[in-house]
Image 1 (cartoon, rainbow, N blue to C red):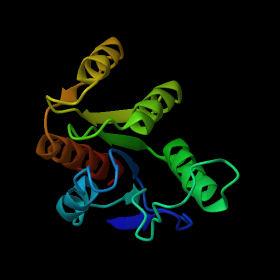
Image 2: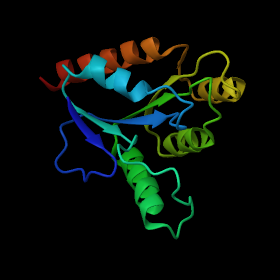
Image 3: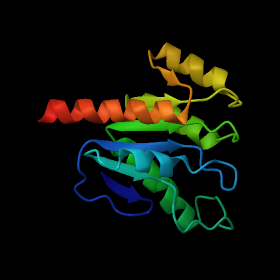
Length: 160
């Protein structure tokens, strides 16, 4: 598995391309992306991880801030280019950007895999939106990882 972390430039990625969308709220969200990466390391493909190693919490989150704009642009490009978008809604967070990204991915007709455990403040919204779009909502990070493993296994069989 290839791992591309924001703001690295994506060059000739190995397919399938999976964007890791979900809770990142610093000092609140678990580092769920690390767990996904650890469990998918032996699969083929590319994971796009927006959790930047050198994030500076003092950056103003405005469009005129070049570093912030770089991050958001990287994430939007990653969602647009991906074959799959995996969402994890950490119950300890609000994650409004993740909700926004879910709407974007739906509008782009992306293949979406969602985990939204009980306790997430807008789980009802996520569940209803998923139901209206014939998507399964997994209840845990481990369920999300198993679903991703199944997708990657299926993709390998279809392309070999």
